[in-house]
Image 1 (tube, rainbow, N blue to C red):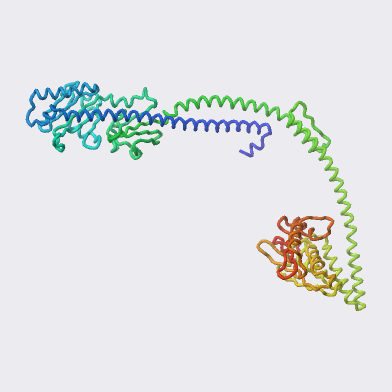
Image 2 (cartoon, one colour; image 1 turned 30 degrees about the horizontal axis):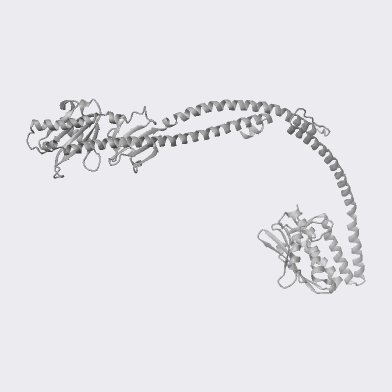
Length: 587
């Protein structure tokens, strides 16, 4: 895909790039906006749901506590006490009085269907309600309904929610509370049954006027769903019971947000469920409108960008055409860009300036090529000069030998070898063996001149002789050691030690002298200035360092250090692994 893109023309590339840039930027903005909106809505919805659940939980806690207090109040009534203590059939007058007490409580709570007080000894019922005892079905359903209920709080208060009573026409909540002998609390004399109309619980699922669309359930602490808008859930287990921790909280599961609140001392949680779909519906509508606006903006941006690219490409096309003419050899071609901005004017000036410079460079190259050809011609002529020099020195050597002057013969022979190695057939890189041979000839000449005052020692392993180094690397260092270290002017005897070894990935050649050495300040100055190149300084120390850097790169070259006893050591660092077989040419 990328290769195909790179093969397109410039204008097409820019159009695609602008389109992608606008689209990607738009998608990023849309994604961030959606994420932020959803997060804010979720947090806000969670907060509103918690407030709503707090209100509902408090309301239900108060209602349940009110019914429980009513049951306890009935137990304290004198007529009810007498009724519960009856062991035989109750007198009609007493039943009438108990019925009046129940009736008074019914008037207090209008949403109560009926209240019944049962004497456990006689199994008599004191009943008052909005319907008859037979229609309510109390006698036939009470045991079943009581068994199906759940323990509502600490003690033995039972709550049930079902459609067993009132001929099965409505769901209702029934509270069962035992009635004790006030003098002997452990003695259960009877039970009060309070049946409350279903609208008390059903309006939990009525969210028309609620701040949040909550699906509310009443869940027993054991996990049984006590009440819910969906009646098919009644009596089933709540699948998220492990998430109900503490008095209140929230959690996310099954693509829904759950908020819950424990109902005080009662063994129930009020749980509200908000599907994510309901949470995000408003955000999605907003995002849809935003998407439509963004799509129109993207189309407008791409259209404007395409027009700008077409206009800009005309200018680029002129430059490209100019470059094509230059590539065909027309170096005198210049371009003119009229009615364009300052940036394109700079392009015009830059192109024309480039062509002027290119013309100058071409002329310079031609001149330098002419000079190079002249140098090659001179070099060919100079090749006969070394041969003349070698022949002359050889002639002197044989004449000195024939006359028995061995010292002159040795010096001339060493000098011939010295210059032959200096020339090295035009090579810049030679083996360490050749360089050492060069140094041996140089030391022979110096000892003949100064009376053998220079002692030399070579500590080089045989496999190091094939190491490739720039020619005339050691001679300037040896010369410095003799004239500035050993000080032959004072006829001071001294020793030179040349060694070579491999240290890791580096080859190190050391030249040590036993001379007067340098001060620490002079040593630091020498190491700091060794890389300063001077083309007029011949093959001096600085030029040796610079040539090594040019051949092998930064990090290689010379480093001076003091000897422990006397004198100076200069180390030449080269890359290891440059050994070559005898006779190989350096590349």
